[in-house]
Image (cartoon, rainbow, N blue to C red; front, side, top):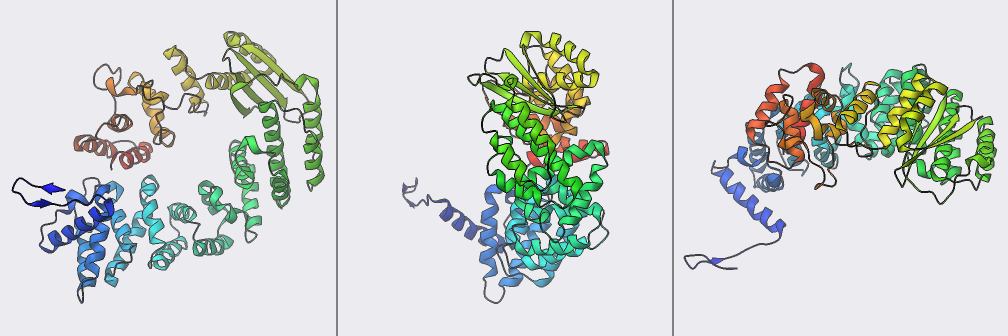
Length: 532
């Protein structure tokens, strides 16, 4: 590369792998001379790979490698952590051990005992994502069997937080041994425990939910859920999405396979409810895309279903009706489908953004109505809806119309609509509303509370149009109309890519220990996000 000021030759290793390898050698030297300051390195992700390489090198020392590697790992665990709530040291050690380094049995035993304690803690779910990579690698390591046995041993206990373990196992259901042991466990599990499986399942582990070993049992769980009217739609829609797929726009693709999966449902109640969802989604796709051809699909579906469904014939009649044939040259910008007390509704905002179309069909698919109006006529149309269909219909229709229209120029009206919808358990978090509370948090205490209560919707907020969007950073501490609490301030700094210093982290930790229990989840999740 050249020479230094004293004329000595300089060498450079441009590839990161070489840099990490030589840095690890230096780490080993410093550690062996008791000069390595762990606190300076282990909490910076840039040095994680180097720590792992150093531990691997130490473990190969002839005769003393096992003892020395154990001492190296213990030095990591003894390092002071300024944010102990998120268990960073255990995450690092999980990664180190996943490299199959040779350490003492006592260390392995203590490590997994302590790891299980962390997993069993009340707020582990708030930091679980931090361990995803480490757990994945542990399950590929020679310690996989020990880890799996420890986890399933805990499931057999009456543990208040066994849902943490079930969530972890489902996340790693790519592991065949975990799947086999989960099947064994779920065969004897209480019906209520299946709620955890439902909550944490996604499309990657549908093989568990549909496995014949406990399919009937899971359907009994859904029958129990059906009794709760408030949760019914949410639970059955998720089950349907796991079974069939969540994309409205491909409901008719590979429809024969979808029908076969529906026919495999044993419970009549669960089957009928899933068929209802299937038909609703067919209608929403058709009406959303202005498709009025290929109605023979419905005849084929009807012929393949194991139980005749009269709604399919009624749906075909509606779709065949000339009233439904919207001009195919009309393009819409966005749409929003939802369920009302007696109707299924779809709102379409046309590309011009000046016109809206509301399509309504009753739940028995006997009557179809369509309303088209200009955006300047919304209040008049809403009043008409209130007169025709009642207050509940009016409230939900108003929420969805303003949702699909995105925030308007009047902040006061935006805030009013946002809060009204939230109070009715509908969160505006799409169609341009994604970062609304974060952008205007300095104007309303209510927005701070909503961010904390719905933290999962905001912790992963992705800022688009960076030049157009301004979060609350410039107003915090200057023109703010409310007192911004520490975790919200930290989150706003984070999304503005401002360096989070130790003082900010300290303030968030102080808030954590004085806030109400119903806020602790959110504060720990914020801590977990802002700390590197």
